[in-house]
Amino acid sequence: MNRIWLVMILLSICFLLWSDPGSVLSEMLDASSQALSLSAQLCAVYAVWMGILELVQASGLSQKLAKILHPVIKKVFNVKDPETEALIAMNISANMLGLGNASTPLAIKAMKRMDTGSPVASPAMIMLIVINATSIQLLPTTVIGLRQAAGSTSAADIILPTLITTVCTTVLAIVLVKLCHKIFKRRQK
Amino acid sequence: MSLYILPILFLFIFVYSHFKKVNTYDTFIQGAKKSIPLVIDIFPYIAAIMIAVALLRYSGITTLLAQWTSPIFNFLGIPTELIELVLLRPFTGSGSYALLNDVLVAYGADSYISRCACVILGCSETIFYVTTIYMSQTKVKKLLYAIPVALVCSTVGSILACLLCRIM
Image (cartoon, rainbow over all chains, first blue to last red; front, side, top):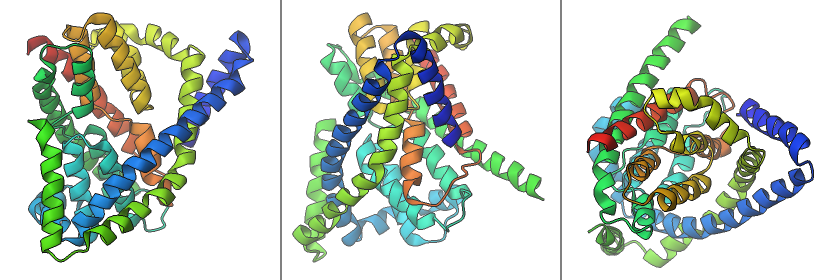
């Protein structure tokens, strides 16, 4: 991430030096204040979701969900801690419903629990990142909303192709992560 | 249909919690309270990535990159109009939704291009953004193969999306 960010910044500044040097700082400040207003929005959204999620955890619903998804999660993630398993189960469920904002705090909590202090990510952490990146979508709510607003006559006809695509990419993701993990292990030996 | 899912889910959670003798008000407050420190923690990560993306877009690098890479993307079945979307998607959520809206307005919501764009957005994630935020509270510095694998999967997803929209 350090390198990618540096390359993005350096390249852009070099380009702008040549085309429009006065805009560098103003663009950066603009983006930063956009980030601040996004964070304020997120804070409001997270307050609602984290309140609800606290209820889900306190009432034992999260453990129930984890129990249902236990066989899958055990196979894919191989985590021992039941609390982490419950967080992952809720994260994946929220993602399936297209609730990205609800799934983010869950993933952050799960990562925190899986953190051992080591600077190298564990296979379960990598799996969580990659599965979130491809997340199976039952209801791409935001996209359907935008499409409806743009005057589509059948805004929901993207649900099926989206579902098929995400199922395929999720399977691919799991296979690739497991494969890469094996290659890495072999290399270390 | 989808309008009812969330309200019913919320209703169920509140009623179930009440029957499990959970103090719903206190518990909700406990959870909501944690949102403020969380957002304060992740704000610098959000700002850093948004600054980089703003500079990239304003400098015109993304349009140049879209032009250069168009033969490759066209070969994979991804239309030229959607390359900028595919390239920016891993970095920015709000930016890619803005791009989707441009596409919807420019080509009409029911056109092939628009449907492709919708499916691409539905099946991909802001990989770089999400990864930095997920890892923001851990000590992990090395992600090994996580980002390459995620990028490969979402590229395959985009190709598949364009293919499926053609036949469905």
